[in-house]
Amino acid sequence: MRAMPRRALAAVPSAVLMFALVACGGGSDSGDSAAGASGTQAAAPAQDAAAEAGGGDAVETPLTGEAKEKAEAAALAAYPGTVVKSEEDAENPGMYAVEVKKADGSEVEVYLDPKTYKVVKTKDEQADDDGS
Image 1 (tube, rainbow, N blue to C red):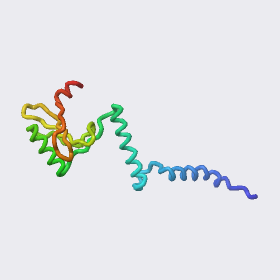
Image 2: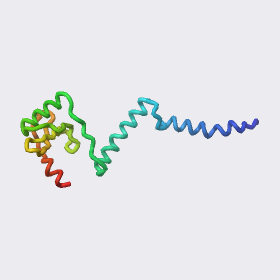
Image 3: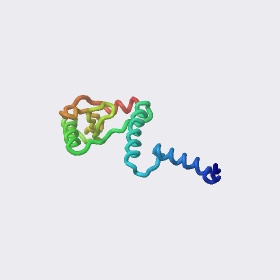
Image 4: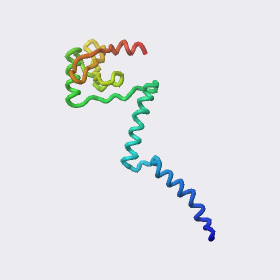
């Protein structure tokens, strides 16, 4: 039986390591859609868990298009003023939230049903800010 050259033996651990890295995804930013998709999916639960643990606010998606227009119009009809922001509410999943600055300078968060655009509840932002 012929002995393997030392160079070949030295290359075996490197080859095994490279194979393992490629098989696991290796964390490369190669743009591979499978690796990118799994990395994206893993990030969202981590953000939710951090928000629930008090590690930060949950990410709220801003409203756009027709949903934005209708939600803001409904909120302003109930509470005249200026829209500060409108978003899908993370604290109340399945609701839209429109923050309105009223003429007196106070702010109210108006929660709307996304199907009917009816006001479901409100939150006085000034009272909320004083409590923290």
